[in-house]
Length: 143
Image (cartoon, rainbow, N blue to C red; front, side, top):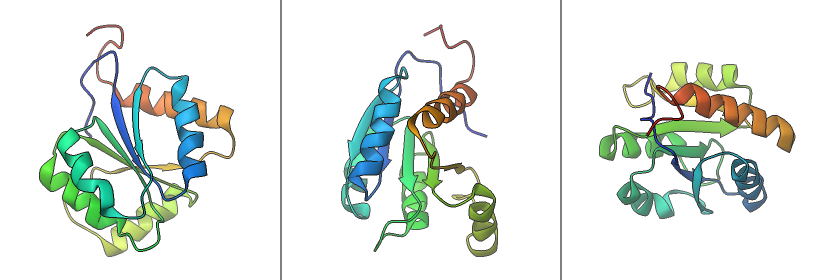
């Protein structure tokens, strides 16, 4: 499993076709000690720019029309081995992992993390706080 280096602030790039979902996610992150860099686009339109920025974390919505999340994961991995990739969806993570196991078995997909979109802001705050705490290696007060 990949971990983040210990820093005070982390850059996060989010790809989601729903502005409402992305704004809700940003609102949750505003209460956490993480920088957010958000783009709303339907597919890989902003992927080249994202790749040049080399964020700590990519968060990709699993279901965007006219967009193959797995192609994006492969592209990210080919250009940036260090970023954490999180795919989030309203679909149960166990179902997501099973779909991946049966359809996309390659080294680019193997280290992707999965989160289910939370049903409310408070739950989202707890889930993302726990997720970031698990991803940060070492003492979070150092850096």
